[in-house]
Image (cartoon, rainbow, N blue to C red; front, side, top):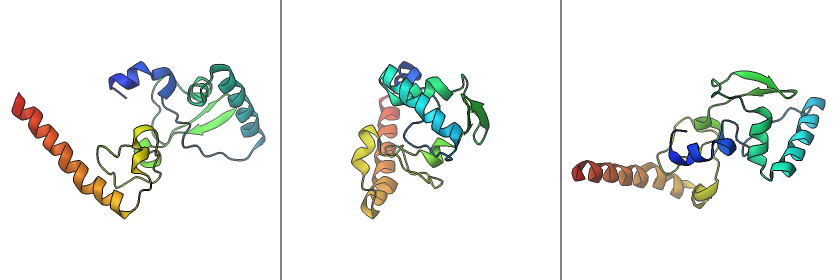
Length: 136
């Protein structure tokens, strides 16, 4: 969350991701989804709308639970439940893969793609680091 892209888009990306959400089917959840739908229509972006409704000002502690706008929100680790760092490395703790933006090219994530991500990408990244150090 420290790179320039995140800093530039902080009002959209923040700490709650609209790509991976679990809901309990309750009356308060249905009310919240209606509020989210209306806010999405207003701001023209579901991610930004979600953050406006439920995102705290500071990064929440993993597994913490906050109540905001009529719903309880539990914050899970993005490395586990919203993994999209395929260009960096594979995490042994990843549970839900999120094929968004440029990493959509990694779908379908079959054995060939897993092999590529666990061998070629770390090798490529190591070579890039070595070249950067050699240039300095």
